[in-house]
Image (cartoon, rainbow, N blue to C red):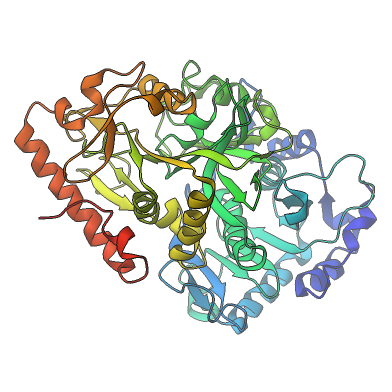
Length: 539
C-alpha cells in the first residue's frame, strides 16, 4: 500500500493532528507490514523466537495479564453521567490525559514506529476504523491477528475513527500524571484515543478496544455487546457461549461440526449476531491436540504465542508449563480455524450457554433457565478460582463478574442485562447454565467434569434432544435438571447424587448460595422483583 496514505488526519482528533506531524518522515515508521515482515523484525530485534510450529513466541515481561486497577476513562461532558464510575471504571481528568499524551508524543520523536490501519465489527454498518501505533513489531503482529484487515482491493484506506497508541517502554509518573502506577490504560471517548503505556501484555490492546465498543455500540447504535463466543450449525442455528477465563468458552465454541463466528467478543443487533474481532486469543495452558485440535493447528507461522516455555533447549512448546504464568496465550487470525465462518455474521441465537467452572461441586452439569433466572445468572457472572490459579488461593474462591465481563463494561451492568433480557423474551431464546467445573465434591475432593461429557451436553441441547426429556427442580438453587442426557451418566446430572456425603453437599450448597446472595445485594432495587427472587434460597 502507498505509505502516503498514513498522513491522513483523523477528523478533529488531536492524535490525528499530532501523529501526522510526527510521521511526515517515512523513515520513522513501518506501515501496514505483513506478518512475515513483522516476525522477521521481531526475531532480529530479539523480541522472540520461532517455535517448531512456526509461531512467534514472546515474553510480555512484568505483566502476563491485564491490570484492571490501572485502567482509566477521561471524565468529561460525554462520560460524566453515562459511565458507571467504580473501581474498574476509574475517572481521570482531561489535563492528565493531555499531559500523558504530550509526553508520549515527545517520547516517540526519536523512535521507530509500527503503524496499522485496521477495523472492528464484522457487520459493515457498525465498522469502526482504528489506527494502531506500536513501538515494537510483535505487538503490531497482535493487531494484525486480532483486528479486521483491509481487503486487498481497497486502494485507499478509510480515515481512522480512533487511534490506539501502545508504548510498553513508556512509563508514567504516578506522582505527577494522575495515575496509580507507571503502567496505564486510558480511554478518551470524546477525542477517540486509547493510550497504553508501561505494559507489553497484548491483551490490554484487545480489551481496551472492547471496552470502547461496550460504550459506543449500546449507547449510540442500540447494539448489545457481549463477552462471549459464538458458532453456527448447518441449520443456521446460532449458539452463544458466555463465560469467564478458564470455563471453556473458546474450547466449546471450537466445534468441528459447526462454523466458528468468533471466540470472545460479539454484537447482537435487531436481526443478527456478528463478531467484533478478526482473530482469536486462546489460552494455551494444558492445550491438548486431541481435545482441541483446531486451536492446536492454528499455532503456526503468523500466530503469536505469549509467555509459553520450551522443552529443554528445543523450540518445542511445553503447553503444560506454568513457569512464567498460567495465563499463557496465543493470538491468530480467525481464518486459521478450519471451521471459521465467513463473513463472521450469523442469525439471532437459538441457544445461549452460561459457562461456570464451579469448584464447589454444587451446580449441575446442565440446567435450563427461565428468563428471570437467566438474568440473575447473567448479572451474577459466576465462576470459581481454585488453588494455584492466583497467589494466596488455597481453597476454592467464588468469582462474580457482572455480565461475564465486568472489567470491560463502561455502562452499568443492568443496562446490558436489560438489553439481553429483552432479546431473550422477544426471540424466545433458550438459556442453559453449564457447569464445566467439579462434581462429587469440592475441588480437591471431587473430580472435574470430563470435557467429553460437557461436549455431549452441548450437542444434546443443539440437536434438540434435551427438549424431549423430563426436568426436575434442584433444591436451594431451584435449577431445572434433565433426567437424562445422551452420552452423560445419569448419576452426574444431579450433583447431590454424585456426592457420597449428602450432609456435606447440603452444607456446601448453602455456603455457595450465601456467596451468590451477598454478591447480588448491589443489584437489589435495580432489577425486577422477579429477577431478585430467581437466585438460590438462603437460610
